[in-house]
Image (cartoon, rainbow, N blue to C red):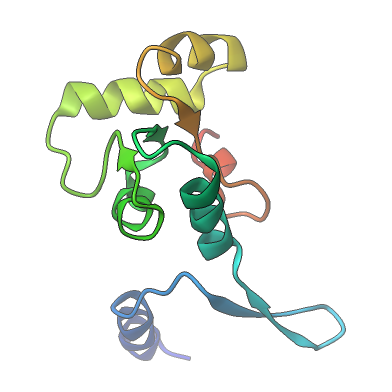
Length: 123
């Protein structure tokens, strides 16, 4: 695969984001990963309507649209100090992150598992 073809294929994939993805297990079986939607539904069904959710800004619009909950940040958050504080809370030790988050949010959503998870963002 040459670089140009790879870029074109990647641009198509990135232009059509989805929260339900297919994956292949080591034995070759194809499975559906529906973790994002399930988590957003959990927030919708198990948190108060006025709950404030802290998560990386990547998920802000999805949380708002699917969970119908307020997020601290989304892809349109321009306040750099706000984003920096959110990043500090999500990449610090549990103790430091808690001391920041407890003043801002009622719930914190963090994705774990795999190489592209939120925990890898703090490495």
